[in-house]
Structure formats: C-alpha cells, structure tokens
Image 1 (cartoon, rainbow, N blue to C red):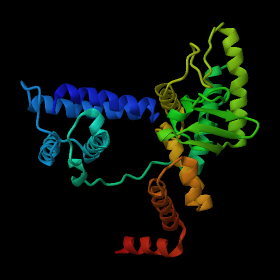
Image 2 (cartoon, rainbow, N blue to C red):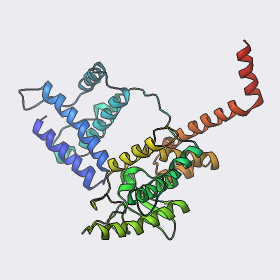
Image 3 (tube, helix red, strand yellow):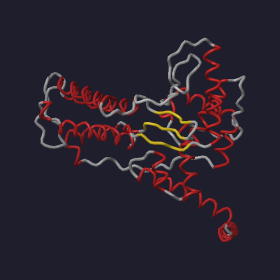
Image 4 (tube, rainbow, N blue to C red):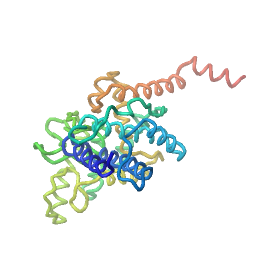
Length: 329
C-alpha cells in the first residue's frame, strides 16, 4: 500500500466525517489524533520504503502489545482500535474509488481490551440545587447572570456543554440549537447530528430571559459591534467556548461551601440520575439525553441502585441492626 495514498485517505475520511456526517469537533479531533498514531507507527515500521504490506491482524496485535507496554489504559487502547476499525470499514466500503484491494477489515476479529465501566459522578438532589442556587446573579454583574443561565439550563435539560456553546439566539436552518423561551424547550444537535427537543424548567427559562436582557445591555455598554448570533458570549462578544464554561465551573466549585468539585458533565449526570429516581422511565431518560443506545442510559440504573442501597443502609432497621451486630463482633 502506498503511504501517500494512506495519508490522502485519512484526510478524505476526516473531511467526510466533518462535512457530510457532521460529527462534532471533538469527535473529529479524536479521529484525527488516533489516525495520526496509526500513520506514525506504519511510517516508523516501513521507514525508507514508499509501500507497505496491507493491514493485517499481526500488525494490529503487535500495536496492541506495544501500547500495553507503554502503559496506555485499556480505555485509551480501545478508543484507538475503535477509530482504526471505523476507518478501515470506510476503506473497505470505498475500496474501488480509493484504488485499494482489500479483502476484509482485519480489526473485525480483534477484540478491544475489557474495561471496567465507571459509574458517572452525580450530585445529590440537594447538592445540585444548592450548587445552582449558590450563584447570586444581579444586573450589576453580567458574568454571574450568564453563569446562572448556563447552570440552570444544564441541570434543567441535561444537555452537553458542547451543545450549550452551540446554542444560537434564534432558530434557522443552519444553526445547531436554540432555546424556545415561550414554549419552554431547548432544541439541539447532539452527537452524530441527531436533533432533539428537551423541556426546560421555569427557573432555567427565567434565568435565560434575564441573561438575554443583560446580554443586550452588555453589547450596547461595551459597544460591541458583533454579528455573533450565539446565545452565550464572552466579554469580547465572541461565542463562549466549552473551556470557558469549564473555567466558570471551576470558579464556582471553589466558592461552593460543600467543597465538592463540580464539572459540567456532572450536572448532566445529575439530571439523568434524579429524573430516573423520580420517574423510573429509562426510555424517556434515553430520549432526553440523546443516547442512540439504551445501554448508554442503563448505567444510570446502577447509579440509582447505588443511591437506593445507601438509603437502605442509613434508614432500614435491619440494615442498622446488621451494622450494630458487626460492631459488637
């Protein structure tokens, strides 16, 4: 196989994922990073030659052993194998146009390392409410008004931080999301360009309405000549970034009396866990989160069971009796 042709194929694959499949920037970056690793390994192993034997199981098994020896985690190795597998599937499907002679994807018969599923970290109901309520927004501090709107929205709807930064002021055929204040819904483009509508609670609607008023005043006060249609902007009038939101979470976590570090995805986990605890409707939670597979949502049932177990241990007479018996022994 020609090394230059491999590079051209990688560039074309990434372009299709971005422009045709409309994957998120984070997904594209992950693919790009993983495929660069593959290209470097191949270039190293076949240094000094323009061609190399086509992909084989032996090649990928040696790469897995190498990554293990480098102490890469099972999760990191699995992600790389997944990216490589998708790329080779694409090559197989387009082998004629790409000019490749490929029989089958060698990675299809190679299993990824087993990973222990980590339970998502969620706040208790009281902790989540207290965290959001700890932001005392006032018109004199536009930053707090914006933070309040973002935090209320994220806990109310469970949308991802990447979906928050993509929200626009108004709906049109080109944007990736917006908030319908009157109807109390947020509409977003999730992973793999799946559009979904999620209800937004009254506190979030109120907080966003306050931000819209302050946003307009901010633009006039700072004389920001912006054409930016983003709902959430920074001090320069540009669209707020995911990292910008993460920094605000860090600031409010430090100011929070609970001492608990809260990150953006934790509010999404809390939204899902609290909704499941109160409703027990796994399918509804799946739809609201935008999960394509129910298995992605089922992990919250384990978190819910963990919560129930803690309640049982703290409150049930037999559980308390068992604890006392253990102390005596």
